[in-house]
Length: 355
Image (cartoon, rainbow, N blue to C red; front, side, top):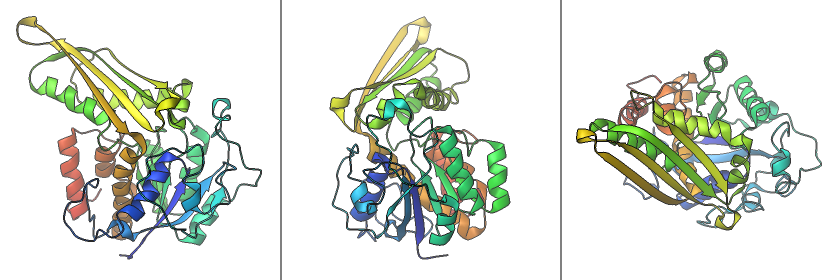
């Protein structure tokens, strides 16, 4: 067991900003006592202070070439600021653009005039343990480039976006062959729209109500929502809907959608509707509203995914990590009800479950 978890990040946007800020915010919390904002203060023997950034990749001229501590606050980032961050000594490197900056994102991102680095080579040279993927949703080619680079280097890959990599048996087999770990796909926020929607749907099912239709509408003003409000939201809608449908033993009309309201910044509002039938066919209609800072919501989950990857590496376990993926991600290799997924995760952390 190494005393550090050497972290690489692809995509220095709002989610990366919240994550890197969190490494400073929680650095001095060394007790095993619960801390607000963390699901595990210690996970597999690792505390937050054990996570050390060693590499970062982006394509923005406002971020490439800067220290990671400076780049996380560069525009168009607008994540909740929890603390100042001291220089990390990690310079943001130019990654491959590929399909990561479509026309609708070009008003927000000026691509740096630099040659992309060899990501696999950087991962090897920096001794990275885990690469977290935070690039924009819909970047199919770029996501697979980073995944392949991590796998080739034998590095853990945490896929925070809705590209199906960890849940694809072919990618899982590649990772296992190269001694790499996969957690994914698409981060399930700490308390976000999907986990709330799942909880309410399961409540209906467990209490004998039939869901007749449901929707989830999300809106925010960050670049993620500028991206999702285009056709690139299709993969995110799929992972959200599958996460809910997996808990309901019958089909029902379900829709999800996104809207970009720039004035909201990184604050997200979600409206969740469930309509159904109860005793005697009487109707029921439940409408829930959630307001939350979007990017810290993902960081509170990714911080555990990183440590799960590392303890698997310490144990010589590779391939898709099913338990961590099921609890932490929307579209894992295998879906379980959240209480079952959490039980399996705790068994994995304790070492009584291999993956």
